Image (cartoon, rainbow, N blue to C red; front, side):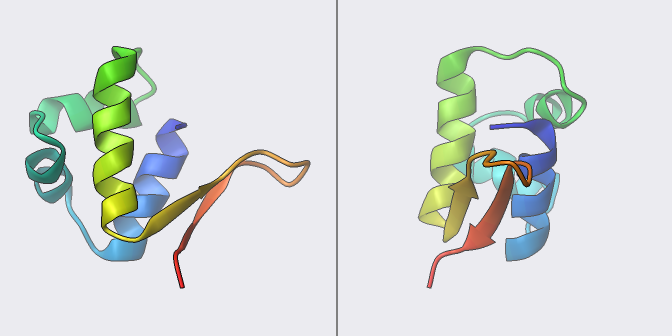
Length: 73
């Protein structure tokens, strides 16, 4: 998951940094660090990604048009 994908995902579901942090079980500072592009442990990124997926976000891999997100139907 890229930093920009995290930001786009939060915007799509209307979550702030604190909302995502609570759902992922991490601190708000951890979310901010991810969104600044800092390196985090793989398990931390997976917890954040999982929380977003449970909330209805689908991650789109880069396929020539750039990585992105969309809401699940």
